[in-house]
Length: 276
Image (cartoon, rainbow, N blue to C red):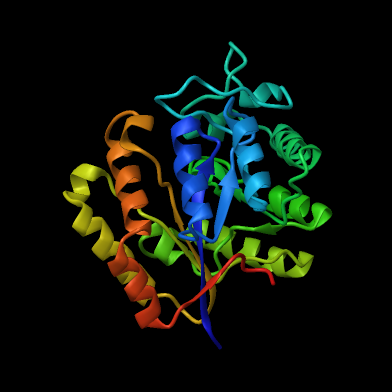
């Protein structure tokens, strides 16, 4: 079996700066996939850019806002997802405590419909900020996988979660994950072998070189089958606070000759998806 990896730039449409950086990386062939936040004001521009490039993003099911940008509003107006002002909370634990499954799926439907109406019918879905996985309270994995099956979508749920979470899952989450993988297989929803991303802050990393070395280690450790490395590249001035530093480092990594040499040296095949 061959080692394959999807290199994804998450958060297309987050705001104009991130959209600009991801579009350039797609145009230059430095990433093989992207995910689109449909409920952001920058989403229309992002959709236009990907149509121009001939790229169809995955739908990045977004149930929370992010600090540093004006809060987003749910496309479906789902009551349990929104604060009193009608915007999505920027705290995933607030969502995890109050979100209702019906509202979650209604919002996922609205975001999928938004993409299809703009001529971008996605073949896969994933979870912005990991809110669907149950890491911040209640899980909607079963409902999400059933939704994916109804719409013929793949889903970013790793068979092996350890590279993503950084170690074994706690027993309750491990049991839930095992059930979700079995359900995905039973429903015919394609999932990747594993997924990985940077979860450390700029302070914890200390330098660009530390981030690069960490991704080189992750690349070398990829298992047989198709996995996904997902990054959040942007300009530092487009993302407030320390997150902007890490996102700028990730954009730099994707253009770094050492990174491309490592991909060639590892003999890893770059893939656009994990379901074909």
